[in-house]
Image (cartoon, rainbow, N blue to C red; front, side, top):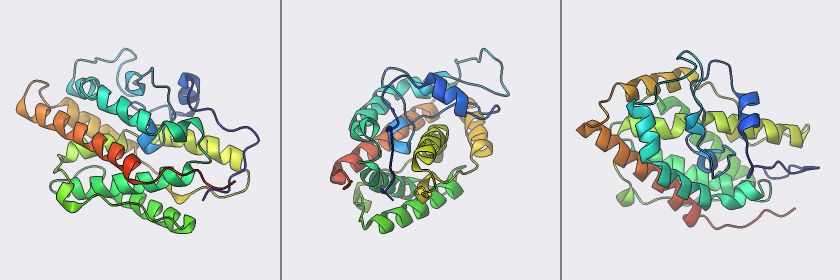
Length: 243
């Protein structure tokens, strides 16, 4: 759906610290890994993974593998932000393109999970189904990453990418809902419970020794997962929606 009418388009390229604080549930562990790829508005200059809340201490220990993973994949994260800059600079005209890219990338992630398990299996299936519906409404046909080109990703890498995005998606959903008045938002932006699964992912990641072989595998696979979003932005033609 692209017929949302904004009296003032939401700004997503500036500092969004205030917006994130206002929108986060009080018990969220942290905000999103993927500002552009999964719908989280954020400035390229800050990393939302640096803000951790909730059941841990107010000054969280950042020596665990989860934070090492964030630091190790920062370059790939920022590259994807740049790929989705048109959406962040002008969200509504590029909303249909954004949705097709999400379908391409998430469908690829689902096919890449090496053993079909993980904390994000249910959410990923729901998101791809919602995006399939949204693209059909728009008359769009998302590109597909060839099966032969899909990497085989560790389930925790997929969990980190999928679940780590949900807080930013909620921020964007609220902005679009306020601007749309009574018009329904695309199904992709429907609120979905993710916090239990995200906490479990954080726990699993922080149990991994940061210098071991498994840590190196998850870092490498997360980088490849980011690459799927970059690929999706290139495979789907960038065309603003008609006003």
